[in-house]
Image 1 (cartoon, rainbow, N blue to C red):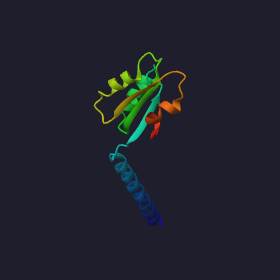
Image 2 (cartoon, one colour):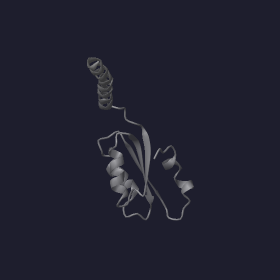
Image 3 (tube, rainbow, N blue to C red):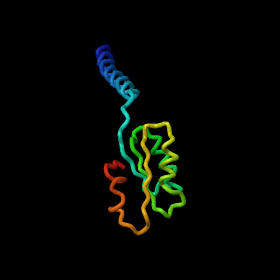
Image 4 (cartoon, rainbow, N blue to C red):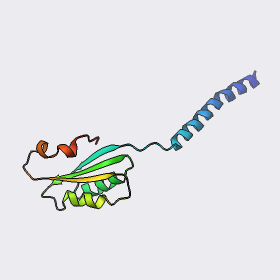
Amino acid sequence: DEPKAKAKAKAKAEPKAKAKAKAKAKAKEAKPAGNFKVCVCGGAGGIGQPLSLLMGMDPNVKELCIFDLNVAMVAPQGVATDLSHLERKCEVKGYSMEVGKNPIDHLEECLTGCHL
C-alpha cells in the first residue's frame, strides 16, 4: 500500500514541476513593446521633467507629449527637444498653452489618442 502512495505523490508532483518550468520559460520570452501615446501634463516642471525622461526611456512608449503652461520655468518644447536625443524609438513633442486659455481649444493634437 505504501509504494502506491509514493507513486501517486510522484505523479502529482511531476505536473507541478512541468507547470513551473513552463511558466519560467514564458516569463523569459521577450514581450513585444507597446505602442502607447503618453502625455505628461506639467512636463516642464521639477517633477514632470524626470517623469518625462522615464516615460521616454520606456520601450512601451511610442509617442510622448510634454504639456505645460507658458509660465513654466522651462518651455515644454525645450524639454521635448532634450528628450528627442534619447536613443529610443519614442517620438517626443512639446506643447504649451497660455494661462487662461481654454484647453479644449489648444490641446486637441496633444491629447488625442493618448493612452496615459
